[in-house]
Image (cartoon, rainbow over all chains, first blue to last red; front, side, top):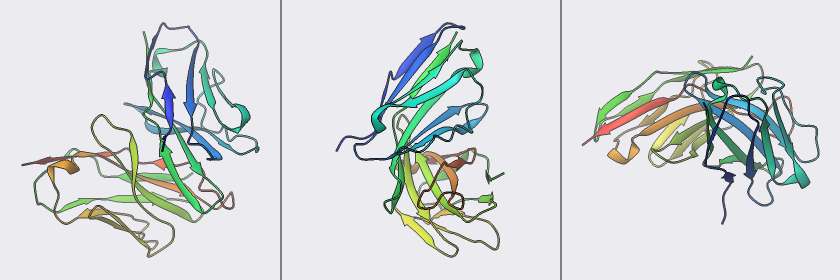
Length: 115
Length: 117
């Protein structure tokens, strides 16, 4: 079946511009996570959505970062006024949280380069 | 807060050698422990997991045992192949706060493993 998909696969943007990254989770997965993988910081948790509960935003590095999940499915991560330190691979994962099968399935990531 | 520490790489081995990657953790609750693998050019994949003390996770010839007394989850494989060349990440998820949910993953820095023929 289809896995987690992310778009775009690569994004190059100028410093100061806004970007939107998209994640399509596996159908039926109620939990969705965003992580960031960068050379200096390794793999970091950003934000977590579980069903209709309020998201866990504790990993967002600044108020320039925000995310939403519409209809319990697709999620968009938005970075406003991008900075060079935002350059990283942004990973999305989904899981069947709460059903006894909790493995997180990761998408291929979006490589963001801020010039 | 929770944290994961794993040995730095790269680890370079010959084919059929024994592989160990050390991983230790700090957690306030009762975490579940994972090893993820990232093959060159591919996304993160779950390799194995253990949900409670003394559990052993295993997959593809890899094993790791959840040791609460030493707060460790070392990854081992008895005979590596060139195809095992990848970056391996140890991770934990603290299940204490939210019932029936694994929650966010806290990752170690990753260990690159290079297996030569």
